[in-house]
Length: 214
Image (cartoon, rainbow, N blue to C red; front, side, top):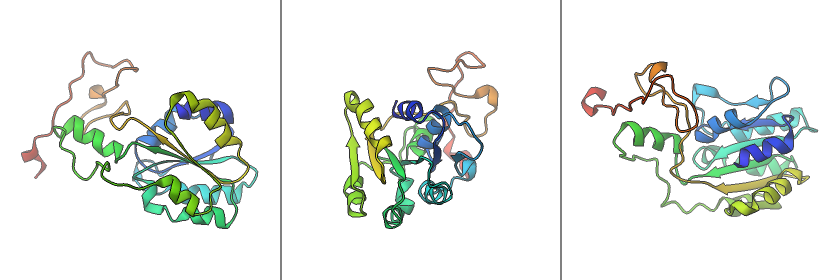
């Protein structure tokens, strides 16, 4: 996992900001932090686009720290113009974009609780080239990671680059993040996924009755 690799390289000393979505949850799970205020996130406020401007502020406040914005292809669109702010002020921010071609957290809920009916969450028809966008905003390092065998070398190059760096990582569009608690459910009904032991045996995913929504 790319986040685990970055965590090992930065040794818990990086300031990490996030947007909102699955990437936010994965970041909370995989990063270690040695000091307070190294983890910048809007939490459950759901403020998409928070990650990049938060990283900019953190880098101004701590010019000698490694500052990483972990973002998603849906969330970063909200403040994509701030990539130009990064290069305008010559800030050595690292932007890690996890691209699953959609709003992953929304898709996850729609698949688990709404019969797999995707509404405004699938971005596969969109042709946004984020690497080209980063380069047009002045990022001299802007790369796309697709092959797993290039993970270690690419991440090392990305983190050690002295100026602003942008790395897009193409991930599984069907990946899900756990644990999660469904709508109207208790912690006892938490879905834990394959790698976390559940509090109850075989917790059921109960689809939402569309009639109950209105």
